[in-house]
Image 1 (tube, rainbow, N blue to C red):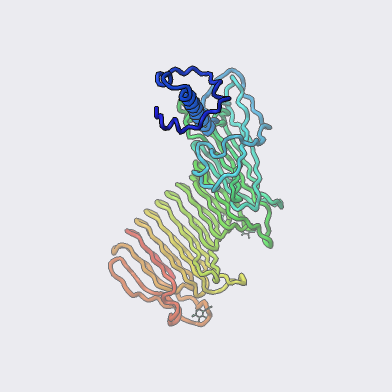
Image 2: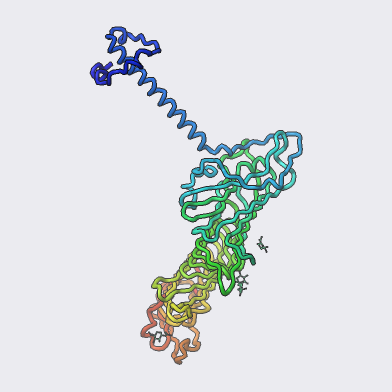
Length: 486
Ligand SMILES: *[C@@H]1O[C@H](CO)[C@@H](O)[C@H](O)[C@H]1NC(C)=O
Ligand SMILES: *[C@@H]1O[C@H](CO)[C@@H](O)[C@H](O)[C@H]1NC(C)=O
Ligand SMILES: *[C@@H]1O[C@H](CO)[C@@H](O)[C@H](O)[C@H]1NC(C)=O
Ligand SMILES: *[C@@H]1O[C@H](CO)[C@@H](O)[C@H](O)[C@H]1NC(C)=O
């Protein structure tokens, strides 16, 4: 016991010290003077209060941790004798009283969006009756509808966790609304298993609004392979017209699991950006228009029509990409409009129409475009039905063990490089055609270099002063034929 420290304690309040009740008879305390004893009692009381405080803090921490753990994710199949009753009208929403930092077993920081969660509201599933079989012999379907404000900075759709399976169908309605309607049909055959999944409307702090489906990472015990929940998701944008297009900010999806996408002809909607991610079933887009579009899939084909101002990036693997894209370039904006296509083991086929616009929104000459296609063990085929006069177009296509076939537009002027193995065939030629500027110029195809597997040259109209080096085409394969037409 440190006497010096004790003497530094403030003197005791006599009114309080004379009612000290606890029994303190340590060997140190018995040898002390009355004043010291009172000080010692005070010290002990302080320590006990300190201990109580620490215990309370620990209990509080434990309680907090318990609250944060995903309590709603319990598996277990309780067989019983009664028929499972289904409540089709039980599909209303309730405000979740869960700690908002957790969604399923993710903290919100681990989810791709929103940046920071402000609120969420989860669907209530049909109740599981006590002592009744949760598993029913037929598939049940329950529907939930969510409305998200059209003015959202980001509209999103998320699916995270195992056992996820479904489809996303994106359409435009004939109704004039100021919200996007997302309806989810959930089909299941095990009501108890369904309780391990949450379907929520999620709001972020920065104008992000979306719908998320979250399933527990915990596996049922004993393991089950017959668990199926299927989500049929319909995203319906309100009406727009050719005269007054619907403008939408950013639309993002990240559907982990086995989801596919269908996008209708959204010709009356213009998005700032669209990002469709995580599909492992086919993606079919009748028409999507945005400043930037990104589609990321795994093992699933991408088919569709796209119009972009800035960027179109499509990537998958072991599945084809077959698209028609319209690339618009704003002349005032000095940046290039780009398209990037990536897959392996399956063909890439793209038809690219290039247009340039001036400030008056009229189609014009010039413009800058960048086209990249990468593949392996499968062919690449690119065609350019149209491109502006004097446009700058950089094309880079690369594969291996497969052919590359590129048909450039008649306005193309620039350099080319075609590289494959010395034994592989190269077919490079230019059509005579008529001068796109109507000046009766002749088209020239000049080979500058031809050795090993490499062919280099230039293509231009007339004498080619300005056009000879404006654009470029670089084609590359190994053990595959190259066909390049101008
Ligand atoms: C997508 O929705 C549209 C409109 O409701 C419908 O016609 C179409 O059949 C749906 N497609 C799929 C694959 O569900
Ligand atoms: C989409 O609809 C518009 C207007 O109805 C039509 O002009 C256009 O051809 C359609 N595009 C596609 C790809 O279906
Ligand atoms: C793309 O548009 C064409 C019409 O321009 C249409 O025939 C085709 O079905 C569209 N692609 C998809 C995947 O919807
Ligand atoms: C294309 O560029 C050349 C050289 O700069 C110019 O003479 C010609 O007028 C341009 N054509 C168009 C349609 O802008």
